[in-house]
Amino acid sequence: MLVLPGVDGSLTIDDGDPAWCVCFLKTEGRELNLGAECLQYIKEHLVSALLEAGDASSNTYEGLTLVGAGSLSPLRISLYIGINGNQRILFVQDDQLMSAASPGIIARLTLRQEDVQKWLRQLS
Image 1 (tube, rainbow, N blue to C red):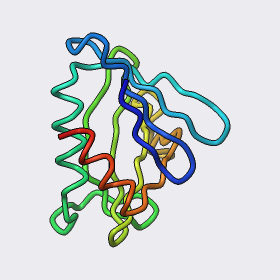
Image 2 (cartoon, rainbow, N blue to C red):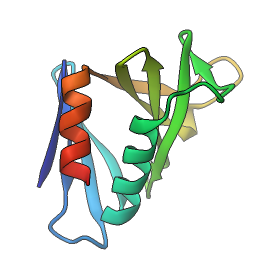
Image 3 (cartoon, one colour):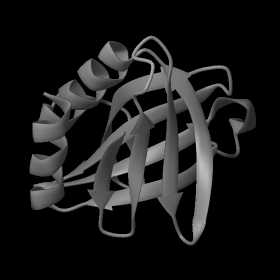
Image 4 (cartoon, one colour):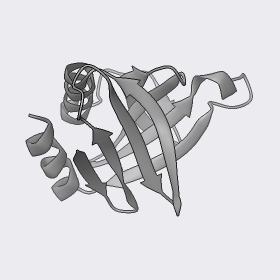
């Protein structure tokens, strides 16, 4: 079990079966089942997004540059990392709720620089 801490909660990856790891987000007093993917895919996408400087992306949300951090099945959830200087924010998007009026963001987890470093150590 990988538990990746944040300011207001955590992302948990149940890595008991590396071929199909279920991810849960605990934040704002609730726990969300985000779906699953193989462990290698989850690690590669999260690490890549965490290390991104964010200068080249045209995707933004709440004024933050967004970097894709992978998609999870079968719930059709997409993960994004919002970049704010050294701080990162994990945004969870329900692809089924997306519309012209709403980006479908259902949760967020703020990461301080020390949280980002913990994530990188655990995911490497």
